[in-house]
Image 1: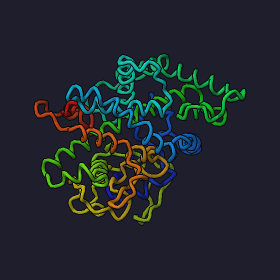
Image 2 (image 1 turned 60 degrees about the vertical axis):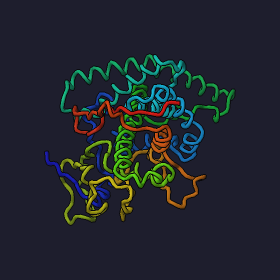
Image 3 (image 1 turned 90 degrees about the horizontal axis):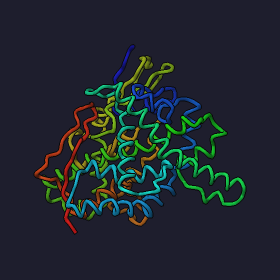
Image 4 (image 1 turned 45 degrees about the horizontal axis):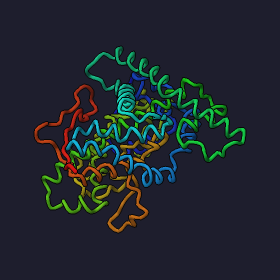
Length: 402
């Protein structure tokens, strides 16, 4: 099989926008990933993505950011403040789990520590499906069995009850007992409302919901930890920027976007060609069996991000093309639907902050910094060496109590 690696930003931009390319990144984790949106192709992908886009609209983002997520942050943060700190990985999963559960359509009726711990364990298990292709340590067969077992447990404990509640509500709408607007606004409800219009048997619905549940918590938790590490380091090395960091939203957003550029959620994007592809940046057609977009090299292309593109610098000039975070959220038909929810929209020095869309990473980091977040000097952070994704395994931090 012939494989071609793409390392230049402009070329990656053109290639990823080609609709004839098939997703090839998650083949190792097919036990969960095979039938989910990110892995679909052609008309089936277009139909499923159209349904998902009914959820991820601007009014949904704005309502969640302004009316729901701030309360979630404070509720999750409270025990960490009382304890004087914790671990960023644990905190990130906890604060983002509620968001992803709400968006996915998974009810949490008990809201107990035990229920939270159970769902967190399941999310961590599901997330292994997305990283099997980059695994360097561990038994892939045992991990696949763990995922299957967890999916069955998830079905019984969370999916089936959530499905039953929504089925009853949908039936009530059909009988005219409640209005359509009374339905939950989440992925599972949308899928169930449209299951007769596309090929969507229950097992696919189960896997799609499990995928949406873990993908936001997994990737955003890692991104959150990377961003805070850069903020902590920059604050220590550039103390003159402390006022900007603490009081200027545009600057904190640039710190976050710069970190997102340097730490994409996966080291490469893999695509299979279904036919030769022509792009403007090449004279000859691309006809390799597989294309690998090197996310680190593309996001650090000096032609787009300057001669020191590999260095964290929130004062970096905007690139001549695209966003400061590069192609971290993907491009084309497989671009991340939740990009605005995670990263917001551009905030400038003169932006009207009443209309600003900050993104959940900004809101979480702002809350942590306001409570004095800083690295724990007595407990060094540890990098995860089990795969090639270069994420933090643990990152102990301190907070001001009170």
